Image 1 (cartoon, helix red, strand yellow):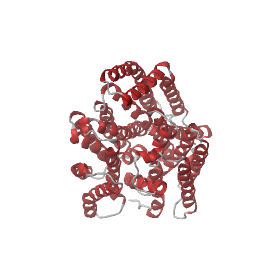
Image 2: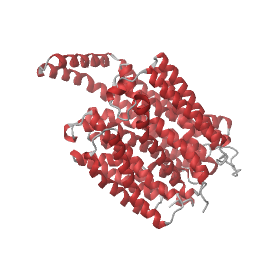
Image 3: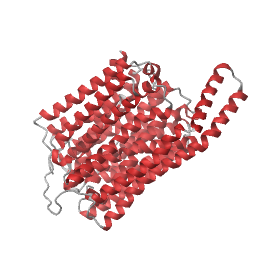
Image 4: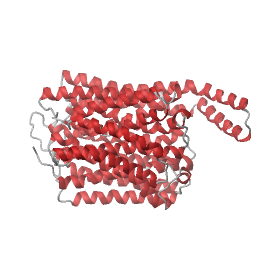
Length: 571
């Protein structure tokens, strides 16, 4: 078994930390923009859309460049230099953000965030296969889990640090976020830009981090050209644009303007009278206008989803018939893994994004926006809990010690998450019984035997069970069930990544770019669930998550058979 290069790994995981740390800044930036620029909910969601869509575009650009030049850019530059270039590119995005904040241009801010995320796309395209390459391929998912654990730590402590720097307090209310000034936002992104440059320097001058250049021993194909894969992805991109354009344009139609006008009228009426009849008439008028418009938007969004799913599955079928011209997509584990990453990121973001709406309902506690904060924090903290437990296997410890730590670390991490919430001034007594869900996670780990496919299968099935319990129950049981999906999602990324890249050889960098493209799921799946809320209600909308988990379970079984057939079994 190849030994893990811990010296290089310790430097590599710093970039995982700052991905989480910097992304957490959006939790402050989004409500600021919504208030400062007088945006509606959809317009504020464009911040997240720009961020996630950039991952897809960035990885697609890398692939196009590699296809045209006949040489994969990341493979040519090496993993180390690719991360450095990505960090510097993100620094340019931070500079664009600073300029846009100074000029009070919201579109410019979206562009700046888009550039930051483009840099993240290059960094992640290099960092994930780099983590696998720093040791035995069979334990590659554990090293990615370690990076994920550090990423979650950055996400958890960022609100405390950013809150203290910007507001002089770790307790940050929604009102404080809305009153944030442009000067302080500029300071935030100046610090962010300096961090990008500083980490880039750390990587560039570090002698313990190898170049990570891919040596091409396979002479059967001179370069990883993939014109058929490129054509498939360009068609898919065209269909996505075709489907999303009507959705965006629908917010400028006469019907949309009438809805906005009536909603303002309703707000005014509520302030000056308690006449239920007048309020009811206005509410019915809004519903009458909104329902057909929302249904049309839903159809277009589903069309976008089908464009991605159909594009990937059709590529899978065509590549199996004739491999030539498909590059990394000639490997079925990679193509099926693309869809798995798409759905995994989608379900993770969708569950977290809709928790606030769920918790505001009377049957789920009727919590205010401030009261929902510890629950949402626990969902994202659940990712840290699971990743910390999985990361234990990244270290060369005895089997007995790993077993002991697997039993202890998740509960310690749970205590840490509750501690963060308490420090931020939140009431946490409603979260104590969640320790039962953490215990289920620990039991699940004992059945996985540290095997990627088995781990993915078990936790996908637990995800199906959790979402079904959440849908068909109510109260705190339902809330805990949806929150626990964060625990079961926590270890999926490294499992999917390592299974999808197994046996790809010189195509690993290209395959990694394809997988990073599929972070696109974070831009599409949450929008579909959000629209489904308007049609079926918040609870039933979580069926979206159930279907995503079902595919992930199928993928776990399917990919294990594929890899064993190729003689590359990781389990």
